Length: 267
Image (cartoon, rainbow, N blue to C red):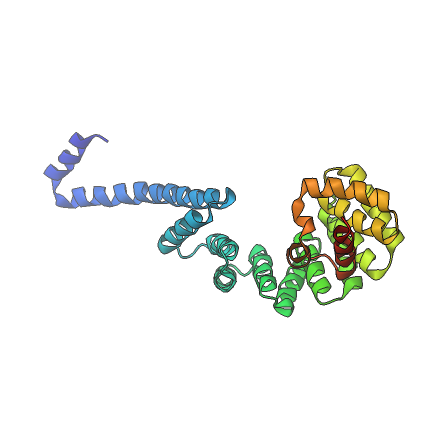
């Protein structure tokens, strides 16, 4: 900045000087503000992505105090609040996000997840159905709706939704494993076994499929195969030995969950 030129304006009169200031601030400050906004957003997002959720929450709070018109920020803060054990606060943030930008679909999915955490299946179902009505290949909404239908004991519908989710995203093995587990629950054991074996061939370190195949093989009295798959599964993810986690977090159907617990009880 050439300040000598500024003082020349002063000699010409205050009007020119103030006119210069107006031009200077209009041209410079919006650029600075935009850069600062992007930096604050990225800092909050980074803290969220690396699991520093308390720090992330503080940064989202700071950001939204300054920029309360950002739909994505509200949705991201809502996700952090859910992880920190505040599902009602999460729903509140997703509501704000939807109010600001009702055409963005992610907040509906995020609100559905928060509703699921409270056992509000019908509210969650409405959110996922809305997303699917706008984007019928949205694999997240299809998969989550399958989980809701399973929680409502509608396993045939759940199985169909898991299948659609797996077709919408062929790199989503959990959808196919959930489909196999729904078949297991429905008594279609041969179909379930076929799908689980295909998954293990393609993803040999996929613990969910190995744990499910353990339960199924035990139910079919194939005890040796059940044992070998269980050794691999529990080494990959020991949470599969926890019944509460299996039913409430992973949300397996009751029949395969019961069979796996019976198998574990004999160890």
